[in-house]
Every structure is written in C-alpha cells, then in structure tokens.
Length: 391
Length: 159
Image (tube, rainbow over all chains, first blue to last red; front, side, top):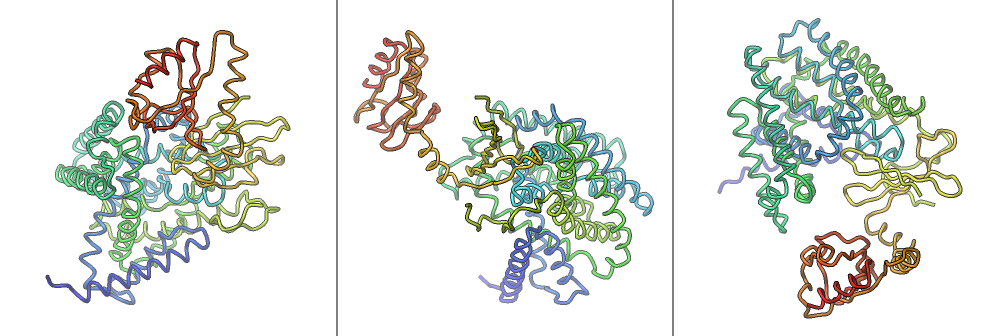
C-alpha cells in the first residue's frame, strides 16, 4: 500500500491548526465554525497556503460531514419533544419563520438571484444554529432560565422545518419545475412521517437490530445503514443529508442515545472538515465585495431573531429581560446555513461568498451579543467550563 | 409538594419547586446524565442564579446524602397511614430463578398485585426500578401491597 507523505502531512497540519483555532474559540465561549471557515479560505486557491494533496480527502470528508451533521440532528430528536414543542410553540415557530426567512428572500431577490438562490438565502437567514445556541446556553448557565424552554422549542421546530426545506431546495436548486419541487417536498414529508411513525411504533425493534453492546459494532452498523440510505436518497434527488436525517429520526430511545455518544466525535471531526471545505471552495477575494450586503443582512436578521425570541418568550410569560435574552440567544447562524450552501453548491459563487461572510459575522457576533445581554453584572466572573469550584 | 416538570427539547428535563422558605429551586436533568441545580433570583425571577453542575456520579452521591437510604423507612411510615397496605422486604437469594434476569420478567405486580418500589443493593438504593433492571443475588426488594401480595412476591422470587 502506498502511503502519501504529502497527504498525511497536510492533513495533520490542517487538523492540528483546526484544533488550535477551536481551543482559541472555546476559551471565549465562541463557536469554532467561523474559524474553520476562515481556515478554509486561507488554504484555498489564492489563499496563503494551498493544500493540493489533502484536497480530495477534504472533499470526500465534507460529504460525510453533512451526512453526520444531519444524522446526529435526527438522533437528538424525540417524538414527545417535537409534539410538545409543536403544541405549545407553533405560533412562535411561524413568527420565527416569517420574520427571518423574509429578509433573506428579499435580499436574494434584490441581489438578482434565481429561485433556487432566493430560497437558499431565505433558509440561511431563517435557521439558527441549534448547535451553537444549545452549547452557548449551557456554557452561560442559562439552561434553568425560564425563557430557555421556549428558545429550545423554537430550535426543535426549525430543525424539523429543515427536513421539509432541504429536499425542496435540492429540487429547486437542481433547476426542477415547481411541480417537481412540490412532489419532492411531499415525498420528503411522507418519508419524515414514515420515519417518525416507524420510530414511534417499531423504534425499539430497529434499535435492537442496529444496537450492539460493543461500541464498534454499533458505530459500524449505524454508519453503514446511514450511508446507504443517504446514497439512495441522493440517487433519487432528495439529498443525502435528508436521508441521514431520516435514519436519525427512526432511531429512538437507548439505541439513539448510545449511537449519539459514539457518533458525536466522528461528527465533530467531519463537520470541521466540511466547514473547511466550504471555506476552501470560496475564493477569498470574492468576500470583500459582498461584505456590505452581508453586514446589512446580518444586522437586519439579528434584529428579527431578537423579535422572534422576544415573542416566543413573552408567550411563556417571561419578563422583559428574559425576552431579550431569548431573542439574542437565537441570533447565531452556523452549521445549517453552511449546509444549505453546500447543497446549492456550484453555480452560485456570489451566494456562497455572501453566506460565508454572513455566517462568519453572525457565528461570532451571535454568542458575543447573547453573552452580554442579560448577564449578571454582580456575578463574579466565571469561566465558561466547569473549572471554578462552586462555593 | 408540587414539582413542575418542563421539557427542554434536545437537552433534557427541568424540574422546579418552591421550598418552605420560598426559594424557587430548579434542577436540570440532562440527557447526558449530568445535572444542573439552580436557585432563581429575586430581581429577575426568570433568571437562574447560583447554578452548579453535577456529573451523574456526583448526583448519585448527593442523592445518597439527601436521603435515598431512608427510602424503605419512609415507605414503612407511609403504610402506617394507609390501612390494609403493608411494606415488606424480600431478599433475592443466590440460585433463585430471577438472579441475573430483568425485574420485568417476574411480572410481579401483574401476578401478585404488590409493587416493587425499590431495590436495596448493598449500600445503594435503586428507587422505582424499571422493568429492565436486572436483579442480582443479595438484592433486597422493597415491596408495597397487601400482606398476601407481599407473601406472593416472596414466593415468586424464591421460586
């Protein structure tokens, strides 16, 4: 077997650098996603340090990264949580959708994008990063705050909306007709309902089938099945990501818990590669021209997220400061905005640059704004991790 | 005491209660098995202050300190207040049929009408054991029911 020295070296340096960046981000309780994007930009063509040998690995890894991101998202999902969120927070979810997708759609239209581009940009501005937000709330010790259930419910409903949105986008972006798009969405919805029904009635059987006391066996089985389903989904133009999400949805209970545990490190690794790949695919010099638009869009959609969080928290009877905390918590955009761009992919260079700039801005600004609103001024400074002893 | 249970989608559950002194206490039980304990402030009742976290293991230790070992005692007190209800202890002896098998397989409640409300295993107490809990030799089952029901559980477990 021939081992490519260049590949190992480049990949090693890339991963070590990502780790360094990640540590830096974590120290300030920020998301590492924007730093991974920046690293990709720096490594891409026209960047400071091109990596020709690792390129094909990064490309392959990125595809697996999307699949794993959505698989683990599906695994997080439980039917009771969804139904409770739906019952209590459906109006908040609508407000969230309308307030935040509209600015993206309008911007896309003004920017002269086609239907696929407009739809993509609407999704980009709509979807908060559940990964960043959930982690942030934990780090800021706000899990037991009264506005938090409303925030988390809005996130769950957003994530679920993605299951209908991604196939729609896949079809529209591929240049399909509206009928095809509609059919795609109906198919996807049917598949989601089927997956949830299966999870509800036969989830434990499926769990028993895939589950194995041995972590290695569990990992191989779940990953194997997911990749096959993802490939089939991609083959029928539903998008691999949606297929993976469905597999995640179908697994439930203990099998899902364990699968999440063994898959999460793998997801983190390949998701990092995915963010890197998106950075790589965008020429750095295309960022500057779109920066003003991205900034404007970021400001507007930060405000609309604050409004939707405010509304959701108010419905729960939370006070003004709590409403503001809920609103600012939702500002961060991240992994899914990038997934959307990964899905639209080639042919939308300007859109890619715009979204990269937009996510760079909000993945950094979101956590910072969240941190400094409604923080307790009298509180002694705490480090974000559990390093301070509790007195 | 009223304990309010709130779902935290994707995270776990939040339990809230107000103690005798009027402090509102929140406990986040995360899916990962970790816990977060909080007391709510006076100025902003929505915001938790004085939050601390416990790993699953630390939470077990805390629960132990706070009174899980008194569980059998407390059930005994309870049965005094309800006529016709008794509490009993049934030991799972080595070599009996249910050693190494899940509690659910004994179908004790269906067959005897008595409930197994806790398992005492050495120093540990497993309160409200689920049907999947596997029994070990030397476990002591805390059973609540009628006198006949408890005797029937004893017979069932002894085989």
